[in-house]
Length: 311
Image (cartoon, rainbow, N blue to C red; front, side, top):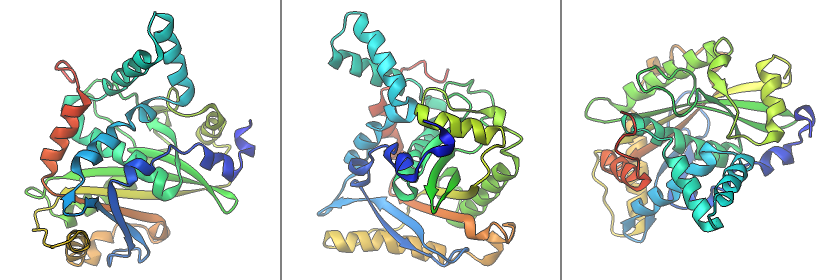
């Protein structure tokens, strides 16, 4: 199959199934008084009656790690090697999962948590599949990881839409949502301005289907003409506000309202550096988490990262 002739339905057929993970989240579309004035995404961890589905969220997120690291073809290759070494399929799949989770590093766990989250949300909310990734996951932790956090592509209305994504995770004790958003906008604009000069930092081996390799090649070589670039800023932060309610609906509304209360404090100067021509192409995902650091610690523990990872 040629990348130039890939049809919209073909692109969508390559999306990872994220429904089980998305079911552990609740989201709304709203302009949140942000610029540009259009629907952005506010999301929280979902509730089952009065209990927040935190453990379910972490578990389902970890179930997406293998797809984040390896394409279907690469998974099959690895499974083949493991079974040929004398394992049954269940043991081979278990070893594949362990191999994938070992790509995560203790010293970068917060950033990789955000990147894995963005990987899933871009596919669900924007119907955009991963096309390129910045540097190998197992890079030297002492080196700066340059490039956008996500590089996904979709096909809409007869043209390709390439999404550059920036995932920022903040502790509210050191940063407000306003400053976090301003920082995120600055970062994504820098990646947008520099990404073509830094295409040598991106790879597509291991984790994208063969059908997309031609598209990736064409984009890298400047041959993919009918394309628009859109930008996605995802801000995850520790929600310090009290959550009040006597039923699921009230608890959800309390958390979603906390987003609106924060975004109303954000003045227009935060968006001043966005070139007017790019304003319609900016998208925001805002994700408050109660006791965020505790949740990321659970994520790290459940990943089972070996003690030497990141050292």
